[in-house]
Structure formats: C-alpha cells, structure tokens
Length: 357
Image (cartoon, rainbow, N blue to C red):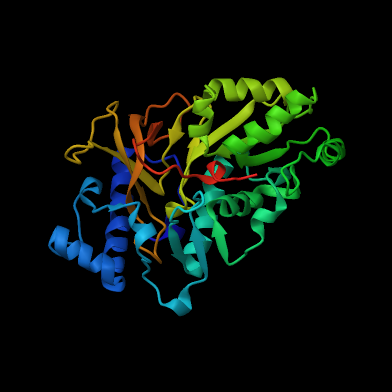
C-alpha cells in the first residue's frame, strides 16, 4: 500500500488486525526496496537473515540498531536524488546520525506529520509561538533534529514568532504584543521540553510574569532526561506551565530523526499513541524476544515512511513498554506506550539536551 493510500485512513481508526495487514505489506515492500538498493543493508540481510526479504508478521521484520546510522551512511537512492540530509542532535564530540532523504520521502514525512498532529490540533492553521531561537534554521540543506522539528511543526502556524533571541533571552515584549494582536484565538506553541522549562517557565517565574495562554495548545518533545535530574515529572511540567500562562492543552510526543514524521503523540489520557503509519515493539534485552504488554524492554520502532534509506525498522536505545492496544479511554485505536528512559550507558542525545549556552 502506498503512503497516499494510507493517508486516506484516519491515523487512529483501524484496529489491530486491520492495521497489521496494511502495515506489514508496506514494511515488506520497504525491506525489498532497501535490499536491492542499499549495499550495506543487502549484506546485513544476507548475513543475519539468509537473504529473506518477505515476512509474515511485523515481529519478524529485521531491525537495525539505531547506532548504525552514526557509523554508516546508509541510503537507497543515488547521490543525485538526495534532497536533504538530516542529522541527529549530539553534544560536542559525539557522532551524529545522517539520514538521507529524497523529495518523495521528505514530502511524505510532512504529509504524515500533518495528518497525525491535525488529530490533536484541528486542521486550521493558528498563530504560532516557536519556543526556540531563529538561528537554529540557518542551514536549510542539513537540518538537525531540532531544526527539523521546528520546520515540520511550523506548518501548523499562520503567523509565527520566535520566543527567544539567539542568546536564548525571552522576547517578552514581542510575545505580549503577539498575544494582544491575536487575543481570543487559539495560539499554537511548539518547542523542546527542557528548553521550555529552562528558558520559558523559569524565566517567567524569575520575573514574576504571567502570559495569557489559556487557549493555547503546546506540543513538545525531548529532554526528559535532564528534567528527571531536577525531579520534574510530566505532571509537574504541566502544572508548572499552567501556573505561569494558564495553558491546559499540553501534548508530549516521542520521535527521532531516524524516523521523522512518524511521531507518537500524547493523548488526553497521557498515553503516547502509534498511528497507522508506525508501530512499536518492546524487545527483551537478553534474547530480543517480543515482550508482552506491560513488560519493560528495548523499544523497536517501525515506520512506513523511509523509502530513501533503510530506517523502517530500528531498535532504539530507549526503554519502554506497551500499555495496551485499541482500548485507550481517549478512543484512539492502536498501541499506546510509555517511555521509561534511556538504556544504561547509552549516549545522551536529543534535541533539547544539546543546547549549549
């Protein structure tokens, strides 16, 4: 099934058995494509899977360890077809993943992101406050995960402003003018979790300022490792933001540059949901068997989008568990998950962990 055909479905309408057939067909197509177009992936399948490229269940589709994208330049398109190179965030001295996109894959990522997020924000574009600084978008050909996130979510903004200067100082006067101009309208906010906490929430507390964002919708992701060190839970994060700006509609998401577009959005019940375009399996860290719902293990993410590089099935360095499937109280179908944290000794990475003042 093509992405265009999948876009005709609601991201969360199909129950497990329906999605399995649609999604498995797409994964098998991508495995076949990458096997024939990416030399390194071809060798990987030959050596570890005997050249098998068609599978009867999602659980059997081979996965690559996420670190491989830091060590190898994996692509299934010619150099001439590369439209954009995405890089993961990393602190100084760390290797970064390089993800090669052709125009079709890049366009599909944006279409799917729009389809997923619209389920939470509606289809209308809104005045938008980007909780970041303008300089992050300087290189338009090679995007970091942080820049890509801003650019992707900017599609939902009609008029946009950046909340911070390039020195990460709060543009308080500009924000106030913006809120006055669009008073009574829903304001869309996007940013990375730690940076929102550090440079937005803490600054408002420091200067004893309240911003009227009661009708705001905030989507944020990344950076929980640093907040955990400050004993900031998801509940405290939401309560604290509410105290300085009155916002109540706050949605976390889980995603990564290696599978841009296929994000796992947090619903009203606090659960992260897989859409029809993605799936998640939890692997036992001893023998890589698939864990039962509720059991904790390594997170494997699967995506219908990566056609220009073999990133459709990836074993991450994150730990989590599947909480349930097709029975979330929010009414959305599909799996819903919880992220526990990073594997011990895994590199610290993430959009908002890497900002250095």
